[in-house]
Image 1 (cartoon, rainbow, N blue to C red):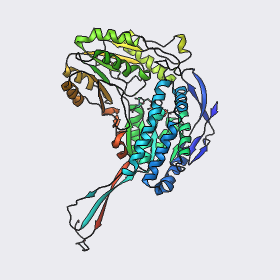
Image 2 (image 1 turned 90 degrees about the vertical axis):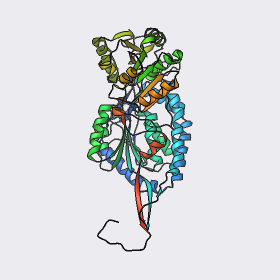
Image 3 (image 1 turned 180 degrees about the horizontal axis):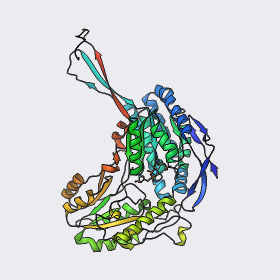
Image 4 (image 1 turned 45 degrees about the vertical axis):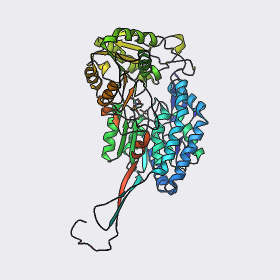
Length: 491
Ligand code: NDP
């Protein structure tokens, strides 16, 4: 088993604790790599390195030079996608087909934000006071703590690192304890691209041993977090004590709404993809399908028929469609929710148990599961499962669909299936979600802002919006009047 080290101040470093823990392959249920168990001491060293890079070499580079480094990194990733995708699949069990797609796309964030790096401009304000020149500067925040979950490790880290670095910040990145391996390999590419030491640091370990000391560190200016909403809430509270900037990308209970005027072939496909792609382990999973009453039964039949064909198996096999659950605790949690839904009276029409077929090997599989007769007040209709479990609810009309869809503490995404342009516009306005897809689902881009309403988060990633999450505005006043005004009144 390969034994990894952490990246601190440009050096590959053993953890101060002298301890490593095993990273487990979710398909074989066997350990396959050793990950350093970081602690407060490592966090302190990493933040110090990031701080000294921020005030040192990194700050002295021009924005154009920063952008060039990001684009060079993009090229290095593009040349290494197959290897990185395979590592991600071994570490988190997601389909190789999906991880290849993500890895092929990741360079675009570095190209896009590399391009934005030297287009961060202030403004000259036509100020109301005579004899004064006023302008603004957009400045980096300092050291950013990037904390990421296990489901799409490199993609979600990229969403933070690319804008943070383009804006001139330095970073300490803590990946999930369950999927840290690709972070080390990614770290090597930063080095190869020529980033100065300390600009990107990687400290691995557990949430309470690395995440917390990082969030509360006095020299961390901002926490950029993706994860569950409960952890997000605690991160938010801890960051508040230090009055830190915060971006939170949290969970969801997204509604995928099918109207009777929809292209039903496309809608069936979209609902299945919304929940079963990535084994339902995505924050944007369309875990509630809202189906217009007039097409309810025939549509459910079509959904069941398509979902029943999903092939579980080895995620490294490109023909597999549903892989294992990434972690054992998450596997148990998903099965627990299946039990809760049954107890609540939802009807299990597909799956509803662990995946036991021979092609599932020793992996933590849950069968693609569909519940009908779900009522809005049931836990299965309200709580994030983060697995391949779909709840189907009928609705009567637009008003009813909006009421049910918005009746959640979350607000990450929503899907609408309709051929009416009026309906598409009305629904996209009234749905309380950071992303609304019409006649498509699970589309993201480096160009388009992504983030949550309500408990799904604060702030935006991707697009021009994202770079402003890593900048602060300074207002500069210069007296050009040459006069000495009365010192005892405000100017
Ligand atoms: P968690 O919230 O459990 O963990 C996320 C990260 O936070 C991990 O690196 C974790 O470390 C770390 N962490 C845990 N406790 C603390 C703490 N007290 N202080 C600081 N950091 C801490 O999420 P999961 O890894 O389980 O990921 C699944 C969740 O992520 C889902 O709820 C999903 O909806 C959400 N998600 C949201 C996305 C979005 O963009 N909105 C995208 C993808 C996922 P450790 O691994 O050691 O516990």
